[in-house]
Structures are given as structure tokens and as C-alpha cells.
Length: 237
Image (tube, rainbow, N blue to C red):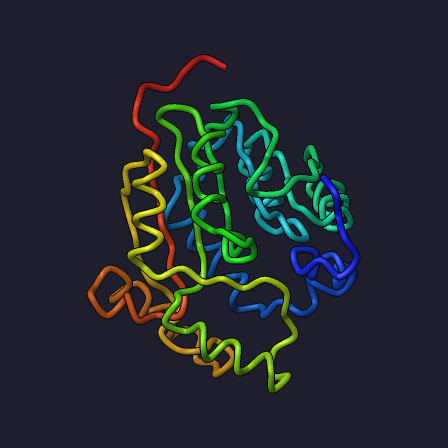
């Protein structure tokens, strides 16, 4: 895979040494809580082959490994893969999310938290994540909601947030369609972060998520989370 200097896909490589410190504590804690406490059964991860696609500095890899999963930490950023695999004691793989290089059906579970929006064609990334998922396996995605794209871009231009690079947010319906087009059956699609987490009030924010995350109002929340299953019976490893 050719990597060009100033490639916008590699923005997070440029901040790899300080990425964890730039992530908002409540946001990362809420996403971990959501994925491993509300969308997946942590007790069912033991021994499962799990791909952390867009692993970043390894927060999801570490918790998945703690629950006994056989984790592959994957990212396009070399430094991040090295850091994630070392801190989580997982297998690290450098790859583009749209061309993962794994065989079909390689994983029982695929987690992608705040990654698909950082590729040129997010629907292609969803298709590739579905390809490497075995029949009966689960795909978990969290990603920003397109209705907030303009606000986020303005915040970046005003230097109110430290993140740049590719940012192609999906609408709620677009994420649904990408999953269905990839042959997946959507089990849960919810919203979270009813207001910018930088504003504070984490306990109230969490309560709103849990009470209204599945309501129509959720389609206006800043982030969305989805669990989908690949049809078919699980195959032997």
C-alpha cells in the first residue's frame, strides 16, 4: 500500500504520540461503556476472534483482550498499530479499512469505533468489515452523525478541535443502507451524545442516551452506534 506524504488518511499518524491525550475522557469512556456494556455481551467474547478496525491507540483492543478475545489491532497508521499492539498485547496489522487483506469470514466480531468516517468512501469500509466477518458474526460500529458534519467542520476551521484529516460522516439512513447492502441484518441502531460532550454534564448525558437513544430523537444526536449480524450459522475456526 503506497503512502503519500500529507495523505489525509494518515492524519492520525501525525498525532500518534499525543492522540490519547487529545481524546476527550468522557467520549472515549462512553464509547467503551456503550460497546462493551450495552451493545455486546463481554462474557461472550472469550476465545472469539475479534478485529479492532481503526484501533487508534488501542483502548478498544485493551478492553476486548481483557475480556478474553483473540484480538487483532488494525489501523492505517503504523505508529498507532505498534502502540496498540504493545499496550494491549495483541496482534497488530497495518491496513487500509477498505482493503483489509484478511480472508473472508476471518473474525467472529468486528468493532469499528469512530473509524469509517475517516475513509474516502465509508460504505466501502462497511462492506469490507462485513466481508471479514464470519456468518453469524457481529459488527459493531460507532460513528458521527452527518447532521453534525457542518458544525464539526466549522469547529475545525476555528481551531476549536484538534482533529482534521478525512471526515466523511454518514447519515443515519446511509449507515443502515451500507450495512444492508453488505448483506448484514441490523439488530440495534441507537444515538448517543445529545449535545457536545465538551459541554459537560456526563451523568445527565448518559441518562439521555439510555432513555432516548432508540427514540426518533436519536437521529439528531451527535453520534450513532449500530450492531449488525452477518446471516448464517457460525463456522468452525
